[in-house]
Length: 403
Ligand code: AMP
Image (cartoon, rainbow, N blue to C red; front, side, top):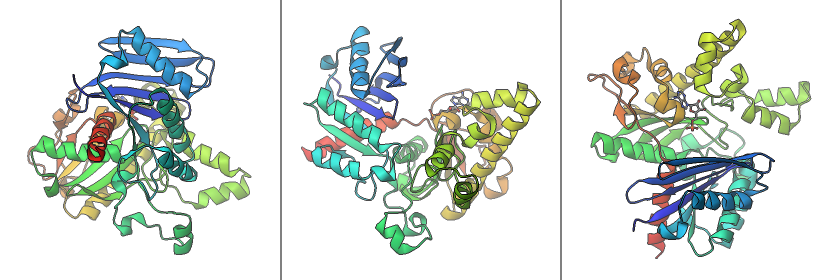
């Protein structure tokens, strides 16, 4: 029987769950429960070719996980027959302490709780997911996989903010980086796809999903990344601003009388392309830019231009940070699917060694693929990310190492 890992990604009002076979890379089941805590929570599950969707009232994360198991049974699945060997939990912030996947025990839960001020929107819901999964599946090992881990040894020059050093030390203010599981997985897969040793490649990885981040990876080690203390820094995202002048925060607090919480919420939830044009979905953004009314068209085009401008700035910066670059890889929802974004991010960069093949870029293919011209000094790839598989593999490696 194939080993299977249950991978959980627990958000404030959602629970994503997948059953993944780490040895074959097969995703057996995938599901999400959204609007937890509301009257009309929506649950979706895909398993064995079946797709089901249910609307229920789901009061909390424990009810959500129970519902996930019920849905699974409804489609004919039984966890007991699947060779479940572990539960992997995505935890966004590992602070300075956690840079490896770690077996979960009570002490770890306490230490991750202590990191919550660093990631108030993300770590508390992950801890809720851990608590209920340990309660419902007490006999399995549970492993925490941290989104910051890959960037733990960023060079000091990239990890340090130029602020008062004592304040930074006391309050652990540094650049941690996020989406690390994806950046690591994609940079490794790029090397596998090209048949080149990871150690020999200088890579730029562009993880463009609803959240978005860029990294520069030299020989498999990260040398810079666009997210910082929190996942708000860097690229323009679906609903997050990315880089802004920190002065904006003080100006809005003083002059507009906005509370810190309101500014934080605005920068996280009502900014990015959604803040500029009303939608965080690039399919809708393109539709508005083409067929919206005059003001919708103008807003969507501006949002797109701002997004592309920032992306190009980071690509240029990382070409300079790396000195010489072998590969640029696009991944995640936008990066894998939006040919226009890929084209506009790289147009005119031939003098820097990047030449797209428009035909390959426009192909509706899925899966890992080259989209640069044959003569392009820098190879441009699209590699689908698979954070669940990476987490499942990290889980079994952790269990094996501790056995
Ligand atoms: P992720 O966070 O990786 O799941 O990415 C989600 C985002 O990917 C969505 O909000 C969309 O903006 C984008 N996306 C998904 N599918 C497409 C597509 N076919 N074309 C353009 N953008 C897409």
